[in-house]
Image 1 (cartoon, one colour):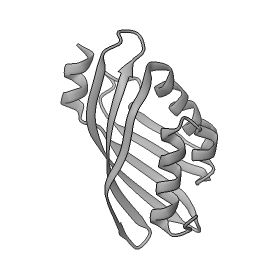
Image 2 (cartoon, rainbow, N blue to C red):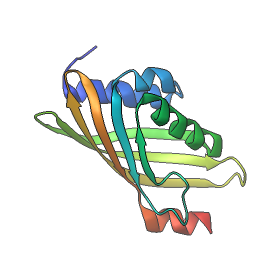
Image 3 (cartoon, rainbow, N blue to C red):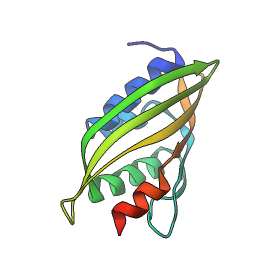
Image 4 (cartoon, rainbow, N blue to C red):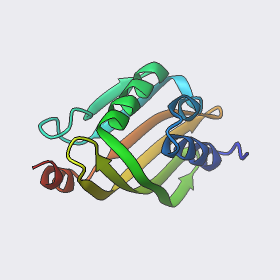
Length: 132
């Protein structure tokens, strides 16, 4: 397993995609911050979560609402301790059965071998259209 910032982010994303939230969170600092930039009118997941337990709780909320059909990190680039990537995903809404496909932009800050901060930018207009 790689221990450089890109390897740490990739390992966390793989664990998340497999639904192993505890393993994914193990790559985060205990006081890490996870922020989702969406729109509170259409997504209850918009906002900031501080600490591993809060981040895992957020991921469980996402998992309760959506089944992950595809979750593919791509275009990964690293500059020092900052890792940027796009994540192409396909999710099935558990209530309606409808499938949403989109791309999110993620920016990770890694320090001392752990993710300190993740910022996730969602396609707000695509989500708004899906949630109608």
